Image (cartoon, rainbow, N blue to C red; front, top):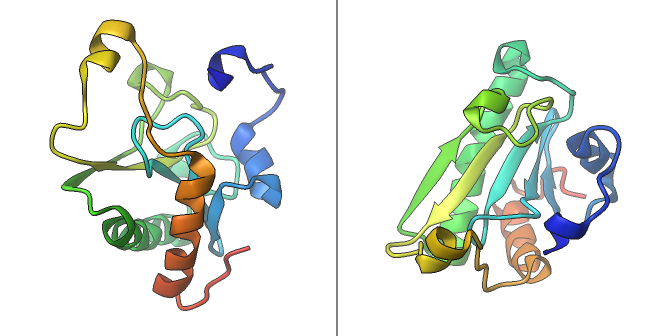
Length: 155
C-alpha cells in the first residue's frame, strides 16, 4: 500500500539510498551496497547496487562487476543461513522494456524462493503477501553480513 500511495520523489532513489540515510542498507562495500527491496516479491528480497549512477551493465568497471558478484556470494550465504530458502532468483532487468522499475541505475536482484511460495493472491488479486516486516528481516540479516564479511564496511 505504501508504494501505491507514496509521493513520488525527484531523482534516483538508489543514489539517495547510497547517502546512507536508508534503514534497509544491509552492507556497504567499496563500490556497491546491499539493500532490502522496500517492495519485495518475497521476504529477504535484496538488491546489490553500485554506488555510481549507471544506466547500463556495460558501464560498470571491472572492480564494480567483481564486487557485485562477490556480494552476491555473501548475500546467498546470508539468506541461506537466515531464511533457509529452497532456491534463488538472481538477475538484472536491463532497461524499461526488460522490466526494470528503476532503469536509470543498474542493480542486481537476489530473491530467495521456497517451494510453493507463490499463491493465488498474486494471480487473482495482483497483490503480494509478505509475512515479515522489513525491519525484522533487516535485524536478522545485518549481523550475518558482518559475520560473512568479517566485519566489513557495514554502516
